[in-house]
Length: 141
Image (cartoon, rainbow, N blue to C red; front, side, top):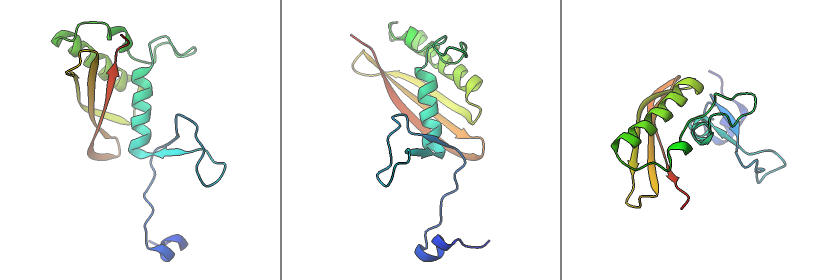
């Protein structure tokens, strides 16, 4: 395999980009008037977050895309409600994110009952290494 000119000058091999997307904020890069990008796992994490935070029926010409996460935010934080939340997230990922094979989805109530910690462990379709992605769902009081 031949080295590129940049690799011969600095010795750093460029990481292969399988997936890329724009940053959600559409922020420009510090070196020019280009839009910022996220690649590989960061792009998939951003896509998962967007998918989970989208309500079903919110997208105009794609009314079935999304999850019912916000509908379950005002339920009790008990076992059945959290397992229902896990089911909503898993079905949204399986139906609308073809780049991801979900391995484990876990919803846990935090010490503050107004927050739910979501942890998604998945692997990409082209990489068997597991990736962990977690975020908080916060209720409006």
